Length: 205
Image (cartoon, rainbow, N blue to C red; front, top):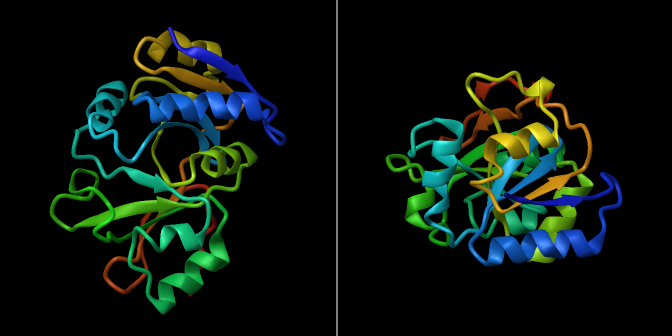
């Protein structure tokens, strides 16, 4: 079963954060809290993880996964950001938004959308996420933890462990974390295209 790492949501303990990152560096999967609910995380070089994540979530393995970044500066190493996109991202991050952007060559092809060569990027507003990325030193691949037959609002970490504890390596328990998906905004074509309205307020002009 997964290793449970209990942390304070606002001041996560360094030892637990390091343990979670060690899991990623060793090719494992973690479940961790974000500003839009619990998510599954894995390292950029773990190219086997998307298939496992797709099985956990019961989705297509070609699902458009997301790269969690610590800041815009880190993000621009992996996606092409024009002036309009930079302004919008700066205004709305950190926050519950996922932006679909053209990927640079630093993004492994297997992690990009196979036809459009794009990838989703996020900068979450959550202390645990910030601590994880600070320790990791690079972005982390991520996907919202969700099950097609379960109301995620009713799940706690013990329930999550029972469902997926044998398929992930570590679960960061930061207490109750409401599942409300991020707002997805496609900026890859030079225009603002709202793909999904979620927690992030749509006020783009």
